[in-house]
Amino acid sequence: QVHLVESGGELVQAGGSLKLSCVASGTIFSAKSMGWYRQAPGKQHEWVAVITSGGHTNYADSVKGRFTISKDNTRNTVYLQMNRLKPEDTGVYYCNGDFVTGRAERSVAWGQGTQVTVST
Image 1 (cartoon, one colour):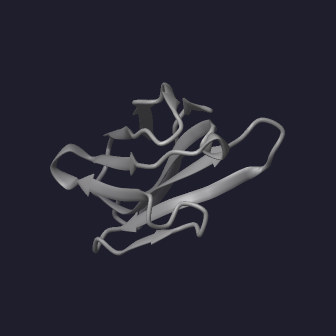
Image 2 (cartoon, rainbow, N blue to C red):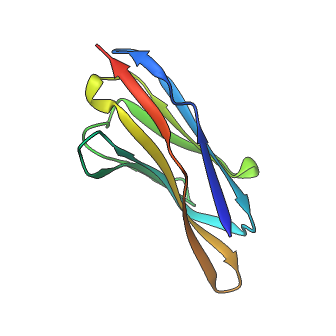
Image 3 (tube, helix red, strand yellow):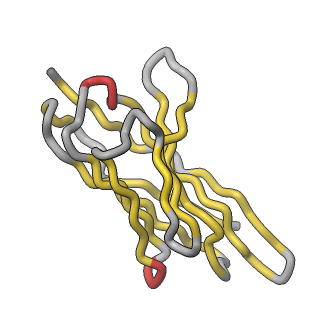
């Protein structure tokens, strides 16, 4: 079983920056991909960014050019650097990962979320 723990969320003023971290633990052979989702109050879950095992990245249009996803394979950690934050970026940010956990075994895991609040 894989566990994901996010950190780094806090209250920040519009235009500011935050860096979120997500650490994966458990029996992990490799991460096929890791990514970030968010959920704003009263809105549906929204995909934000993803990074693959090969380092390929992709972003939602709403964050492209402002957010950067990266990873440290040695620490099983994925990061989300968020710049030029807007009030509409407010929400709970969730880490997600697709992991190889054994021979022909894969596991999809979600973290508990970290709150990001952007004030005007």
